[in-house]
Image 1 (cartoon, rainbow, N blue to C red):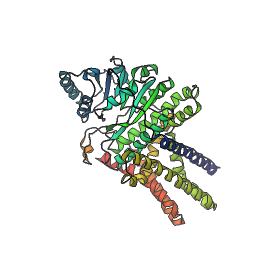
Image 2 (cartoon, rainbow, N blue to C red):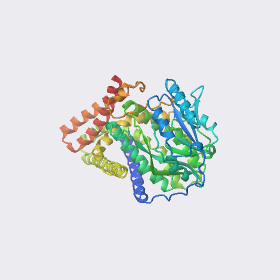
Image 3 (cartoon, rainbow, N blue to C red):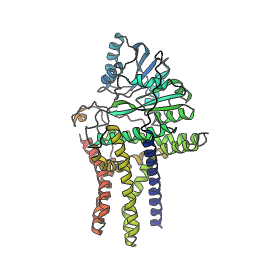
Image 4 (cartoon, rainbow, N blue to C red):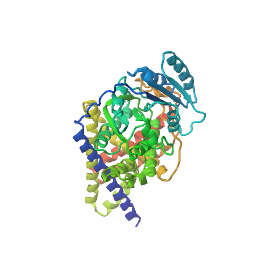
Length: 482
């Protein structure tokens, strides 16, 4: 009976993962259809509108100067810019900002250094607080680790002035892409998200989301959607869906790129992934009834629900991963070798599809496959390794467990691989890596077992599982020691 229950959950998880994989392949097909159909350029305005640039900041002493330097370098009429530094810092960052603000005011910039008594609502609360204190009808938002190119507003605002457009999102660039294996993997994952998913969803009229930074909003769209809310950890995703449910259209501009710094430290990355995964499930639970009961076409509602629940896939991934060894042993004892071969083919096809998907993103964003393509097997392994971290996030969201917004530390990494270790900002200590070590050992045992049984064709997959969990565990351990 117990084995039957395990088999049921195993097959159910594999089936659901297969459906998520088919959906990815669908997005890839749509992307390939639309990627060579660029948007028509909108007319330039006779007069450029007032734009408020919101810069939410919390303890960003290493990157605040670079951020402000890039903002004042924007090719936009100075008298049409209102810069808001929404500063919730508790360290020396505030003194730096005060000094920079004074200098920029003397240079004729309309800039406000805004401090709150309490950090209520974290980033969402800061953005809402600043929104009440500007007369501008258009709001550009940049996180502290971004440095937009000078033509950013000139390329985005004309699109936003079109009838019914509520938000324009640019593509993220990666200033420290080649810093380490971790940043290379992140860059590939994000390129696929922006280049393939955003474009495929947007060009077919489906919902996609503002990514919290490197985008420009129409103020009325924010207000019509109910404003910034902080009952989820992904306030950007939440507002995006509420605004589109309210009838506003979004636009994605893949050719407008805003460079940023990827997390160079593994625990910062895991915290970021945990926040994104948990927040997306929270948003799905919050907005599920509104999406289902809306009058939108079925295909838009279906895509919205799949998108918001996509991080459930990590929970589905960890279940078959942990059940794989005992169930395979059970089936071999019954001489069900044909079923074992079926599992192998399922993993093989899934891996090949993942390689095609991410190889497309690499080719279309960098213009070449080499040398990035050699990292794809490692990307698959690290994705598997993240399943524990993100499954934990999904379970917390499903159980209604509340947690604070944990920022991702920014270090201004400029080339030296150990540079982040000398910085003062550190993620909170976490001992999840101990469990990741145990899981890596579990798959090491599985490798020896199936090698002894002669199932050599399964070993590459066990090696991927081992690598993923061992890489995350060892990197976290090494980082905490540093």
